[in-house]
View: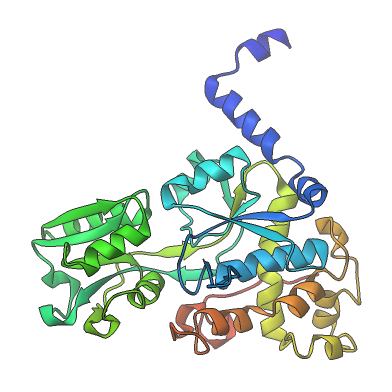
Length: 338
């Protein structure tokens, strides 16, 4: 036993510490009485406080859904605004319980940062924003351009890969925060601004003259965005994963905030299992059996959240596209609750 302990490498010790921090996250959250969510600082449609200080967005809805599943109360969540470069440190240290900040799921983040990505709540891809006055119709016309990009993101690497693969040159202009990156583009310091396509539509609204700027058609990467938690706590990871799947399943079954109470009378076995009127599926998560009912009642299904935050009912007007249900040509697909 002694020799085994002595032989622990520094890397193993770090893994053990990370596991200890994350062990029993559900119990920790319950004892605090609230969920601590790491969020974006100000990305319209995903995570942003309004003038009254109320947080809104697709990622914000997800955090409120988790709080609903645990506490039957969507207000029992606090938000920690995080710059991209700080987000994984905050997760690793235990400063936040979950990172829900339009973060791309990658192999290196799975294997070297101690993160576990439970699901993809938004399928995205990187694009470019340019001034219409440049009369550029394709990113391939950006040879020699200056490009504003945020530090500490997968965006930097994708940008390098794209220009190298297409044998064209560019000059990166790098900033630590998204706000200063966008301001630099707006002031004319860069010919183009790059980030996830969803972010381009959101950030364009902040420009001095949004209508003078256009998003180019190319999508140069795969950016599966989703919530992340620390590795080593399977129960907590399951709660995060199945919160998203419950919202998707609710949309599949036509269960909404408006009709969920009526749906409690449904004889459809899929709906009965979803809402907890049949089976004890909540118990397997360490939650009450009406956990999904609480999510839908307080926050809504996935489609409702999408539409009001980034879809037709929002300023962004983003089409469902690949974020549509699998049954309608999209990628959103939930394993069965059974």
